[in-house]
Length: 137
Image (tube, rainbow, N blue to C red; front, side, top):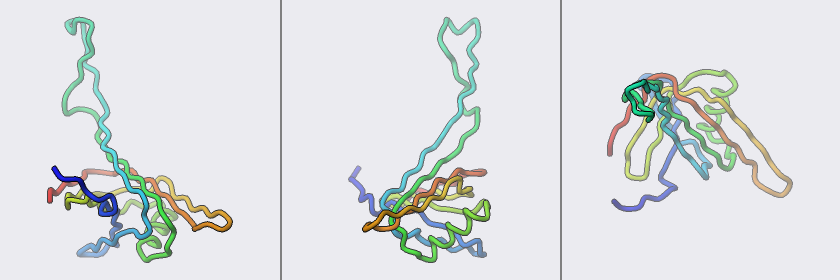
């Protein structure tokens, strides 16, 4: 497996159109995602004192987070308005090798900040709602 450039790991926001167009959220410095799996404990008297978990059970979700320099791009405006609307919208994560995860997400946190004599920054956190599709490169 070859190493991948972090700059190619992209967050893209959907425009809600049909067909939907996804645009890279500009100014990103860091983007990450996490797949979350809740456990279902099925430990019982026959478990010999060791915990047992039920495979394929529980709730699965995906969390996204990103931060970067505020550039006032069209995609950043989409993110900002979706956060203010508290709406669920489609997003994509594209990895450096072209793998893609896509699904509906709610922006759970949107933050902007700026310090004197520095650039304006923003950060977002998103949580999945429904199924996430994975497409290998």
